[in-house]
Image (cartoon, rainbow, N blue to C red; front, side):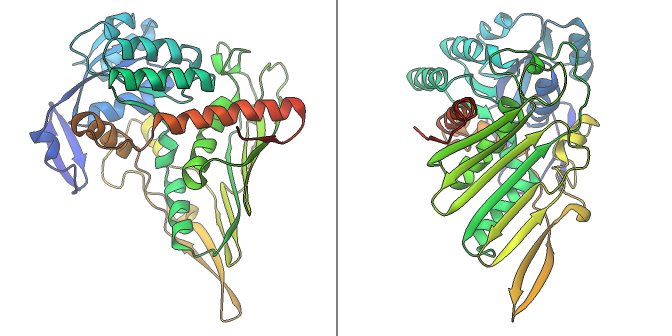
Length: 375
């Protein structure tokens, strides 16, 4: 790991393809709409740390968040209105980290203004809305991507490695959990209000669906059960989705009343089993104020490495598998490359659209109490 100084701040970058390239290429002027959890934790730190971007503006209508934004990013202009970003001819890339109900309108406005756009997941509320934005991005010849950062989790990277290694033989079952324990409702939290795109399925569920789609493609059918477990809540806070593939069962689960989590990943194959506990460490690091790309960024402690059990000479053998590092920064490297050099997006809007379609089918399955075909 080597340290550079750029844009009046320290930057740590791994030796590799991004090494000196940014210092010799164009800087993309970027702005963020929204400074809630998404903007503060998952967007701004990575744009600010990447020398390929210049974080010119942040918009928030919350005076407290505006003060925080100016404190953390003193060289960035903080505005109260998204239009001050969308209508700024200097801005090339807009990152949208606002409530789900505004994703369609803000993304559409930004594309029409000639901006490249990264929109926080979930992409949109409906697949039809996603189709509209995809068509508009093509018409405008602009990069459009959805911030499915959990593809760059340590756990997801590790199970990809396990599957690709064929250590399990033929994979027959894949199960993944994103669970939390939050007994009390949060006053004013839009995700807990009965609004379009609220609830746990559009939130944590979107991550799990996107990961499954990257690994296995679109399923043949969707089965879903949703529950509301906490008193006073008007949206679902627990779900189980089963995606049907030929010879493979994929189970995605999430809940808000899981005090002691079980395994995060469970993979069964005809040659063995892989089980992994624990969640990716990057989110907690970001909330502690650590900078993306610092030494050992995304490295998981050994106690949450997964365990692979296979049979060797008729005896079951279990060994720990070192976790692949989490690398949220790779998403933003790719966004830069797509805008600057026309390289292929890792997270394509068409893929994010399929996630929304599966969410629609999950609601249909739950409402009709049946399995529905993917169409």
